Length: 98
Image (cartoon, one colour):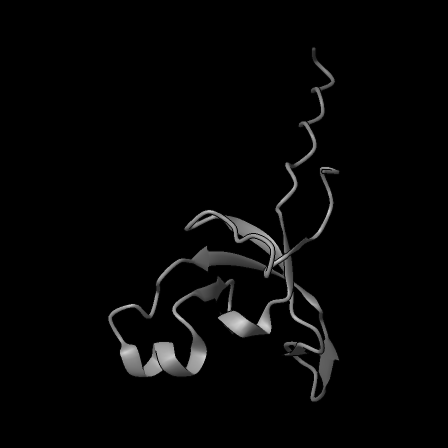
């Protein structure tokens, strides 16, 4: 599998607690200082396996799993269609003294 390939949630889920890029089609985001929404289909999320396991009423409506977002971007399980691991940051540049 290619390193940067999107993975369908129906095919495989991330590890519990894994930080990923998640696709949420049509996700509306209200940006600070703006009075309108922008569509942001890709979010940084953390997969929370069996998050609603102890809350049968919520699990029946939203599923057992949950996606914890950064800021106000939490998502119910069914909202995310695809995911991929967050890529590693590039190496830090060498200082000019070295």
